[in-house]
Image (cartoon, rainbow over all chains, first blue to last red; front, top):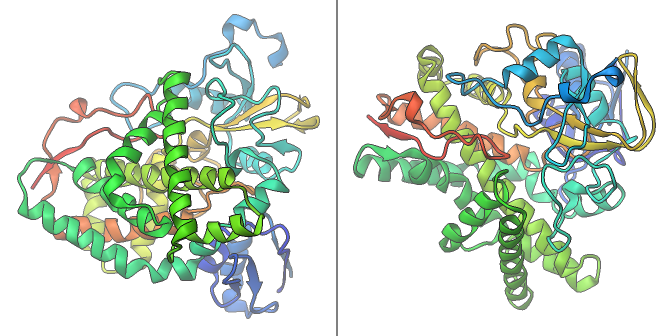
Length: 64
Length: 403
């Protein structure tokens, strides 16, 4: 699984952090998404997929 | 096709809920959803925008850059007559101005910052329950608990004196009452706008460690006008207390009416089940029952029909959260289901800014109130409870409870 993010589209809803805190974080100054791990292990795949589903700005992209 | 409909057959929106089903969306809206994702409705001004009733189509349109939130555009399906002098903040604007203003206030709502507030919120909730238990009963849960919790929290976050709560709660109630006159609503908005403007004057002179003081830094650098800052303050103050208060009171009523679900929540020590219950109650109750209003900027093809540029769009997310394709057996309250993909906070770039705070407050309330008062029950018949049928945010005006 390969994860990419689009910080320009991000609206800082924080839902990705709730879904997969090992993969996503937020910048302190404005809450915009930070990618901690672009290549998450298989056991985190479901959480990362959920993060992409609930991201309101469609700012998370996943390639398998 | 809808275009061949006799104009008299186009139903009015918003629609009425069924008697005896206070938690369910209007039956006419359910019927529309069963027919298809798109149909026409008639508004207060005679205009006939589209109402979008299905989950997938609502999400697609709310995330579509060809769809505008700009209330000043001709054809925007406004819930009430516009009042030109009232402050309009970023929820009714498009990017890039929307994003510019929104990003000025996102920092206090990050997951980290909100989690750091959890102990303080727990203390607020514990103290209010101490007062409830020491006071007379029956008691109105709305005034004694549901309104104070989020009001105290948002006051602390914004830097608004809680002593002014009667003033801002009353004006907020008028602003979101869909039966209030344009004049009443404009006056209430004017009162709150003036109040925030004065508060910003004080913070400019003596800044503290709160969100409004943070905005004064941007006023000083010229990034933000004081009028826009006051507009943001009004938006966050209203959205910060009224919505969560309704979720606390209406959520409690829904749980009291579903004792099996209440018992599950009361008896659990699992924060995952508490968090799941919050998501399910957000989905099931969907308190913003006025629809999310938008305008098509270009022709958009959907479900074999063409939404024309200039057509109004109403995303009825209350019925979207009851779409059986997204939530099996949607009319059942089930705190163990995975409801995290609900659209109670909307979708797209306008999705609720305060959602991490709302979730945390509700998690604290739902995991504390029923444990500390396990015999909590209604002190009136369900038929006697005054529901906010006239509010753009749904809930109850009062909730008499005892134990």
